[in-house]
Length: 386
Ligand SMILES: Cc1cc2nc3c(=O)[nH]c(=O)nc-3n(C[C@H](O)[C@H](O)[C@H](O)COP(=O)(O)OP(=O)(O)OC[C@H]3O[C@@H](n4cnc5c(N)ncnc54)[C@H](O)[C@@H]3O)c2cc1C
Image (cartoon, rainbow, N blue to C red; front, top):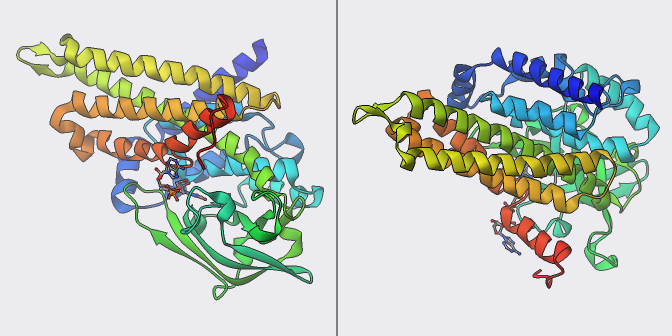
């Protein structure tokens, strides 16, 4: 236990050291130019932080979601944004737990060394929204291949990734017993896709997130791209989704701490009416409340991460951690804007950038309403609403 605590503290220090090389003006410039943080992602990869979950036998660090969450938390606490590369960590779960030995040997060492990027996760579609089981992208077996047709939307980093994990329907909805049956997961090598069968168009969003609309036009992929058994893919991606929620919660905790640190610093420095604004309880109390909310959310994040690593079912905890942390970081973001007055809106203070970035987590990867609905139905036993 002592070793684990020391290792985590060391990891935190190392990540903070790396992030110090990417200060506010680095992120501000990328945001203004809508650029991908290539240099930062390369540095994270070179430091092995992006291969934290890959077992040592495949060249990774062989650590757990707890350690992965520490890495992402520190990036956000530094004022950076891990959205450019965080998916690599949670997508990995599906490959690690359900991929064949041949798939793991083929991809994991190359991902661990940074030669390959696995950063695109294709689930959301224009016509199915949050109702994932109604997705319409089809994958039909044809000899040694699958043929994929359909469209995905908001697929982040598709233009910056070598590999994409895709969820597609392999058995039509009217032919399955449960609507979550008949979906399959594929690992697509984007380096091999012909441009007339696959394309990705950028979507401009309120913060830089490198999202795309992706079109599959009879894309032929080898049958060996299928992960696990055909038609059982929905269960496989649930593993990734719980890890994703915990990791996003950790990013929100990092964001929350960043907002609180900036608010506290400014409230101690800014003098109005001959006194620092922090002397006014109307300024200090919202910061104190935001701090308490972040700490409470952080406890739920730790509980969820530790359950995940112990292999214990943690759907409720992962969802609650994500919701509480997203609420806490959004609350802290609002407090930071208010504390900074007009300067909260000025680009050079970075508050407005982080404010835009942390707002996303009320909606993606799962919206707050859907988490509340999960808790109501699956934890409290209230009636299904959909
Ligand atoms: C910047 C960005 C990056 C993203 N990256 C990815 C990615 O890499 N891969 C990927 O697959 N997806 C990605 N997404 C998609 C994201 O996961 C979805 O936008 C999100 O899950 C919500 O789905 P939707 O947009 O279809 O909203 P909808 O499902 O259309 O819902 C719209 C609103 O209605 C509410 N709502 C719907 N049904 C109910 C109900 N029954 N009860 C109460 N409220 C309800 C929702 O909570 C939401 O607020 C990204 C989105 C964004 C904005």
